Length: 88
Length: 88
Image (tube, rainbow over all chains, first blue to last red):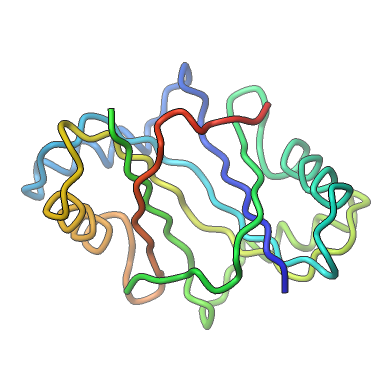
Protein backbone atom coordinates (compact mmCIF):
# COMPACT_ATOMS: atom_id res chain seq x y z
CA UNK A 1 0.00 0.00 0.00
CA UNK A 2 1.44 3.40 -0.91
CA UNK A 3 2.35 5.57 2.03
CA UNK A 4 2.65 9.32 2.17
CA UNK A 5 4.47 11.00 5.03
CA UNK A 6 3.62 14.49 6.21
CA UNK A 7 6.16 16.15 8.49
CA UNK A 8 4.96 19.14 10.47
CA UNK A 9 7.53 21.31 12.22
CA UNK A 10 7.27 24.59 14.12
CA UNK A 11 8.47 27.49 11.97
CA UNK A 12 12.03 28.61 12.79
CA UNK A 13 10.86 31.93 14.25
CA UNK A 14 8.34 30.20 16.54
CA UNK A 15 9.33 29.17 20.07
CA UNK A 16 9.35 25.41 20.54
CA UNK A 17 9.00 24.59 24.25
CA UNK A 18 8.96 20.82 23.69
CA UNK A 19 12.20 20.97 21.73
CA UNK A 20 13.71 23.25 24.37
CA UNK A 21 12.75 20.78 27.10
CA UNK A 22 14.41 17.92 25.24
CA UNK A 23 17.47 20.07 24.58
CA UNK A 24 17.69 20.92 28.28
CA UNK A 25 17.35 17.30 29.35
CA UNK A 26 20.18 15.98 27.15
CA UNK A 27 23.14 17.30 29.21
CA UNK A 28 21.47 16.09 32.40
CA UNK A 29 21.43 12.61 30.88
CA UNK A 30 25.10 12.86 29.93
CA UNK A 31 24.67 13.68 26.25
CA UNK A 32 26.65 16.51 24.70
CA UNK A 33 27.22 17.99 21.26
CA UNK A 34 23.62 18.88 20.45
CA UNK A 35 23.18 22.61 19.83
CA UNK A 36 19.46 22.70 19.15
CA UNK A 37 16.40 20.45 19.14
CA UNK A 38 13.10 21.08 17.38
CA UNK A 39 10.14 18.81 17.94
CA UNK A 40 7.36 18.36 15.44
CA UNK A 41 4.86 15.81 14.24
CA UNK A 42 5.04 13.02 11.70
CA UNK A 43 1.94 11.63 10.02
CA UNK A 44 1.95 8.41 8.02
CA UNK A 45 -1.01 8.19 5.65
CA UNK A 46 -1.84 4.87 4.02
CA UNK A 47 -3.55 5.55 0.72
CA UNK A 48 -6.03 3.60 -1.31
CA UNK A 49 -4.83 3.18 -4.88
CA UNK A 50 -1.96 4.76 -6.72
CA UNK A 51 -0.22 7.97 -5.85
CA UNK A 52 -0.77 10.49 -8.59
CA UNK A 53 -0.07 14.21 -8.66
CA UNK A 54 -3.77 14.72 -7.95
CA UNK A 55 -3.60 12.55 -4.84
CA UNK A 56 -0.51 14.39 -3.63
CA UNK A 57 -2.26 17.73 -4.14
CA UNK A 58 -5.10 16.36 -2.01
CA UNK A 59 -2.65 15.34 0.72
CA UNK A 60 -1.12 18.84 0.56
CA UNK A 61 -4.59 20.20 1.25
CA UNK A 62 -5.02 17.82 4.20
CA UNK A 63 -1.65 18.96 5.55
CA UNK A 64 -2.65 22.59 5.24
CA UNK A 65 -6.13 22.35 6.71
CA UNK A 66 -6.01 19.52 9.25
CA UNK A 67 -2.51 18.30 9.98
CA UNK A 68 -0.74 21.63 10.45
CA UNK A 69 -1.40 25.16 11.57
CA UNK A 70 0.15 27.14 8.70
CA UNK A 71 0.50 30.23 10.88
CA UNK A 72 3.06 28.60 13.14
CA UNK A 73 4.08 25.39 11.35
CA UNK A 74 5.71 24.27 8.11
CA UNK A 75 4.86 20.98 6.51
CA UNK A 76 6.44 18.71 3.94
CA UNK A 77 4.69 15.97 1.99
CA UNK A 78 6.62 13.05 0.56
CA UNK A 79 6.06 9.54 -0.70
CA UNK A 80 7.82 6.81 1.22
CA UNK A 81 8.47 3.13 0.65
CA UNK A 82 6.13 1.26 3.00
CA UNK A 83 8.72 -1.00 4.58
CA UNK A 84 11.49 1.35 5.67
CA UNK A 85 10.59 1.32 9.33
CA UNK A 86 13.50 0.19 11.45
CA UNK A 87 14.64 0.92 14.96
CA UNK A 88 14.19 -0.91 18.22
CA UNK B 1 25.40 22.56 10.60
CA UNK B 2 24.74 18.82 10.36
CA UNK B 3 21.24 17.76 11.25
CA UNK B 4 20.04 14.39 12.45
CA UNK B 5 16.37 13.51 12.34
CA UNK B 6 14.78 11.06 14.75
CA UNK B 7 11.32 9.80 13.82
CA UNK B 8 9.32 8.20 16.61
CA UNK B 9 6.18 6.26 15.67
CA UNK B 10 3.78 4.13 17.70
CA UNK B 11 4.43 0.43 17.13
CA UNK B 12 2.01 -1.17 14.66
CA UNK B 13 0.34 -3.26 17.38
CA UNK B 14 -0.20 -0.22 19.61
CA UNK B 15 -3.43 1.77 19.41
CA UNK B 16 -2.90 5.28 18.11
CA UNK B 17 -5.81 7.49 19.21
CA UNK B 18 -4.34 10.65 17.66
CA UNK B 19 -3.97 8.96 14.30
CA UNK B 20 -7.50 7.55 14.60
CA UNK B 21 -8.87 11.03 15.33
CA UNK B 22 -7.18 12.44 12.24
CA UNK B 23 -8.40 9.51 10.16
CA UNK B 24 -11.95 10.08 11.40
CA UNK B 25 -11.81 13.79 10.65
CA UNK B 26 -10.70 13.41 7.02
CA UNK B 27 -14.06 12.28 5.54
CA UNK B 28 -15.86 15.00 7.49
CA UNK B 29 -13.61 17.52 5.75
CA UNK B 30 -14.34 16.00 2.35
CA UNK B 31 -11.14 13.98 1.95
CA UNK B 32 -11.32 10.37 0.83
CA UNK B 33 -8.92 7.59 -0.13
CA UNK B 34 -6.97 7.44 3.12
CA UNK B 35 -7.19 4.00 4.71
CA UNK B 36 -5.10 4.62 7.82
CA UNK B 37 -3.29 7.39 9.65
CA UNK B 38 -0.56 7.00 12.25
CA UNK B 39 0.73 9.99 14.16
CA UNK B 40 4.17 10.16 15.68
CA UNK B 41 6.89 12.61 16.54
CA UNK B 42 9.76 14.07 14.59
CA UNK B 43 12.85 15.47 16.28
CA UNK B 44 15.42 17.58 14.46
CA UNK B 45 18.76 17.65 16.26
CA UNK B 46 21.39 20.20 15.26
CA UNK B 47 24.80 18.80 16.04
CA UNK B 48 28.07 20.39 16.88
CA UNK B 49 30.83 19.12 14.60
CA UNK B 50 30.87 16.28 12.14
CA UNK B 51 28.59 13.30 12.08
CA UNK B 52 30.59 10.15 12.71
CA UNK B 53 29.40 6.64 13.48
CA UNK B 54 30.14 7.40 17.12
CA UNK B 55 27.91 10.47 17.07
CA UNK B 56 25.13 8.50 15.41
CA UNK B 57 25.43 5.79 18.07
CA UNK B 58 25.06 8.54 20.67
CA UNK B 59 21.94 9.83 18.94
CA UNK B 60 20.56 6.27 18.87
CA UNK B 61 21.00 6.21 22.64
CA UNK B 62 19.20 9.55 23.00
CA UNK B 63 16.37 8.18 20.87
CA UNK B 64 16.11 5.09 23.02
CA UNK B 65 16.30 6.75 26.42
CA UNK B 66 14.74 10.19 26.00
CA UNK B 67 12.99 10.65 22.68
CA UNK B 68 11.02 7.42 22.53
CA UNK B 69 9.42 4.86 24.78
CA UNK B 70 10.79 1.61 23.32
CA UNK B 71 7.94 -0.40 24.83
CA UNK B 72 5.33 1.25 22.62
CA UNK B 73 7.31 3.18 20.00
CA UNK B 74 9.77 2.54 17.18
CA UNK B 75 12.36 5.09 16.20
CA UNK B 76 14.53 5.75 13.19
CA UNK B 77 17.68 7.88 13.11
CA UNK B 78 18.88 9.46 9.89
CA UNK B 79 21.12 12.24 8.69
CA UNK B 80 19.40 14.95 6.71
CA UNK B 81 20.58 17.83 4.58
CA UNK B 82 19.91 20.98 6.62
CA UNK B 83 18.01 22.90 3.95
CA UNK B 84 15.34 20.49 2.76
CA UNK B 85 12.49 22.17 4.60
CA UNK B 86 9.77 23.26 2.23
CA UNK B 87 6.03 23.66 2.53
CA UNK B 88 3.83 26.64 3.15
